[in-house]
Amino acid sequence: MLTFQNISHEYPSGAETITALDGINLRVNRGEFLTILGPSGSGKSTLIHIAGGFIRPSRGEVRLHDVPVEKPGRDRAMVFQDANLFPWMSVRENLRLVLENEPVSEERKQEKIVEVLDLVGLKDFDSSLPHQLSGGMKQKVSIARALLMDSPLLLMDEPFSNLDERTRDRLNRDLLEIWKLRGQTILFVTHSIEEALRLGTRTLLLSKRPGKIVQGWDTRDLGEDISAPPFLEIYREIHSTMELCCPPSYKFEMR
Ligand SMILES: Nc1ncnc2c1ncn2[C@@H]1O[C@H](COP(=O)(O)OP(=O)(O)OP(=O)(O)O)[C@@H](O)[C@H]1O
Ligand SMILES: [Mg+2]
Image (cartoon, rainbow, N blue to C red; front, side):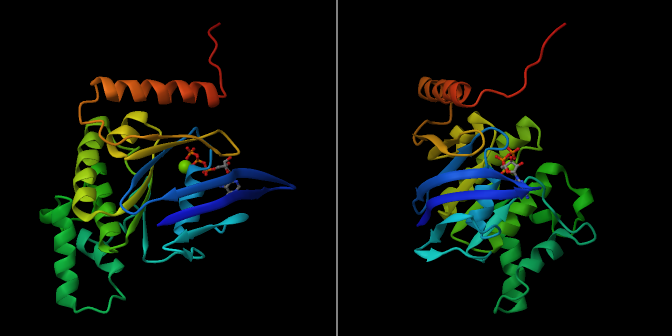
């Protein structure tokens, strides 16, 4: 469904260049929930932005349903770390913007908004302003906005990393439910092995810069119990692979 063929990307940096990604080959199947781990600077966001068509890679090609991705499109919805809502607009008005150019009646647009708000559990907050919502609720609005686009592909770049652990757990469960219901293909970047394992059907680890794929793990059927042996085993394996490939580059020394 989505393929990355020999993707490399360099950013200009003064007189030099920074190689963010180097030779990424990847095939994501329809309906897969792919989680992406990797140290800071390993090119995870770059990869997501390339898939979204926001960045043209220096080399290689991304194809969605066999069509080259060259610019952003409605067949790919993005969710970022911050909800990025217009603060002067209500939840409903923020969502309505997505449907501006949809060739459907106003009545149908309003119905669709109610449907997605219901799906993320915010039906009673349609007239709230963003500042009246908690961080988790704002992220839910941003997920609702992505769902309104009805895209087959959802690209999520650390969408829950600014939230407290319990809210994140809750949203993880909600997102899984939505994914099961809608069957979209999801690429989800996170720094948390636990979150990657809870959510994904497959997990990839990128190396430190320049980002390459170190290894992939099949993470289906691990169950919900994060203290159960299959979960712990794969957690430990990913953790030790990370320690070997990409140890933190800083050292804290006590004097
Ligand atoms: N616009 C840019 N101009 C120059 N260099 C950039 C730009 N964007 C990213 N980079 C560099 O490319 C590398 C990869 O960045 P990227 O944001 O993709 O990493 P990341 O894995 O998402 O990191 P993090 O986990 O911190 O979000 C980094 O070294 C970064 O400094
Ligand atoms: Mg990033």
